[in-house]
Length: 107
Image (cartoon, rainbow, N blue to C red):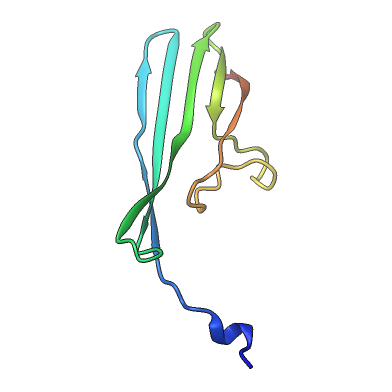
């Protein structure tokens, strides 16, 4: 009789994240895009395969006044100490959220 542990085959693979950030900025507008690709090496008998291609961040930020701006789109959020919302840079894909943020810069 075979136990479940006897029929399992070990597997070894490596994942890699590639990310490119591009920002275009003028006096009143900032456009930011950060596409990323998750790559898997050595999984399921394949030498290499693309696991996932998506955008980590893509947003537009418009300056309303000298101290107030609004950012709309997919963006990394870090609130409080990061327990609820954080970019989670330790994760392979990280975390970003769609939304609108009002940013206020105090002098």
